[in-house]
Length: 239
Length: 324
Image (cartoon, rainbow over all chains, first blue to last red; front, side, top):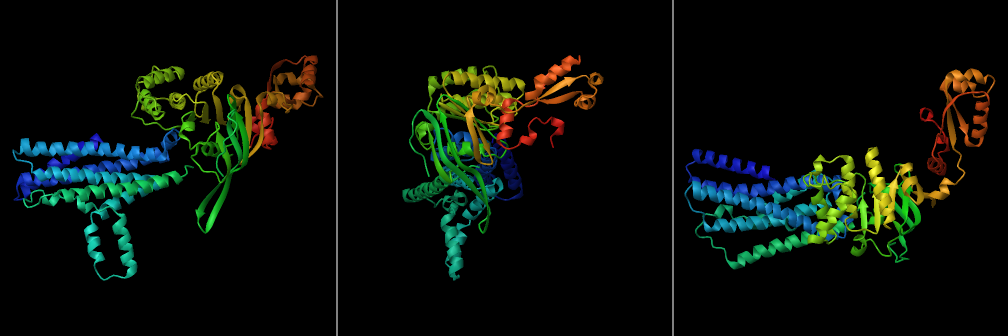
């Protein structure tokens, strides 16, 4: 994980520097924008790599047998893995954020806008949802490749929820509308966590109601996904 | 289907346990009966060995006992309760075949982790880990990463994590798998010590020597069916025919002209003799002043009993080169 993080930091800095030379934009603003992208990307990379590696050890090499033979319920096992994964992910994200802040403040001599911290908090909440979804897919899935692919497409389509919402408003056949509705409600709405484009927007003020909506969505979606994973794990047999 | 409360002196009570796997497409399922109506009682403080060829259903039986698989039909009771009870799992230790451990951790860290799953904490946990490391002879290598462990060391740490919760019942699947002679002896000594402390042992194995030395009772599983279940002393005193190989120098064949085994001695340097006529044969060779190099059984009693029970009599008393 440390290697992933280090590479992400180097790539982020190099890319920011290159873009600042090529563009007419404010270097600090570019750094901030790319920094937020890098923070989220590093969290996603850690999650996907973690899912792939731990699927191999837990399921293929059957490390899970030792855990489930202990006085631990399957729900506790799943919850423990979700929280453990999330802790690592959160540490990586906070580490990246510290690097971005350091580059902006101490190297660039600029200021970090207040919205940056809200953005960071939203990224942490988004990662909580994605970690829960990823670990649930891992206990449901039957192959490592399948788990990683499903997780990847869930994340990809989760960022296109706005487009799916727009499609639902069009005149479509009931079948297609039904499928889109299933996709809309099943996939995580990752757009509600997206504040990156508006970090420098002086008109944006996050109200407590908006915070409540995001927090409620995060924990209710995660809870439902966790329940699905738990029920599945209780029924699963280990040949 | 399910588990029944039962006599607590029986560690594992299995009644009519069956497991069927369905694979393939939903419209063309392939059905495999891994276990067929297994009924078995294992008494507390007993060492029970479940023998069988590869694919006999031994690992399936263990997974059903531990709740990793759900039975198609039948009942299982463990220490008077159900495997779904946390309190029952707290007093069971399990060592799977070729266990996987995180390579980044040390042996001590692994035991601390597994000990915490048994709700051990703080000083109590540290003391218990030290005891286990001493028991499995891993104190010197405790702070070395698992990536540097040999197979024998991995098995010992595996046994360690199984024993960390002071189990009343220890279930091991092929515990001697992949071990060298030293590792084999160390594991055997651990099992014998555990027997003395009153731990019930359930060992899945196809190593017959292990069964003879460690187990009190043996069950033979073949193609999902329990063919036999008897005590080791009963087996050892049974009249299973065992042939012997009498090693004789080829040059001695000249002294045996006209005897039926002259050709065998000329060709193979020895003769295969049934146990019933061994004494007579040796006497004959002695009278003819033939030098006998050695006399050895071609099968152990347990091996002979096992082969006979599973209906593979054709392998009984067969030398290695003769086996297909």
